[in-house]
Length: 153
Figure 1 (cartoon, rainbow, N blue to C red):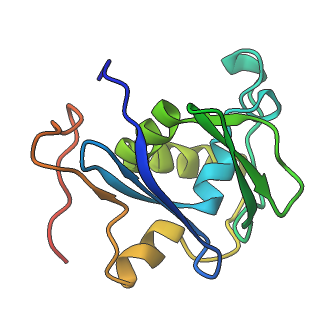
Figure 2 (cartoon, helix red, strand yellow):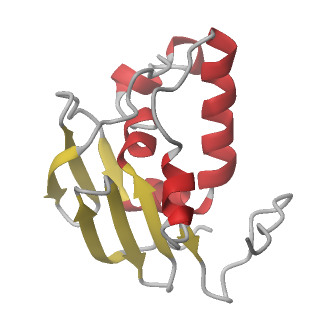
């Protein structure tokens, strides 16, 4: 996946707290605000190494207030909890869309290990309940190795 993917459309759905992104290869992602917030590329979240990363808790109801395009390579997201550091470049957003399932499951596992109990519904389950797929890939995009597609509900 060395080829640069560029977004052709970005829509913010504040009521449902979802950022919808379509890319030039036909990939289409619906990324919940909570997911984007807990995987912020900022140093405040990621740290300067994996050992200094800070697990984000209590972000279940976070929303996006504003999006600001940065040049032709990224978007800055302003969250309603005050977080606005970290630039989401197009390749990082593409990765978050493609790998949403293992990343989200890893996040849920890590917060469970701390004893934290999420306060609210799972945002990906909410998407599916509305009949919206978190990820739609064109036939030309190979699935991530080791992941089986989810069956029909």
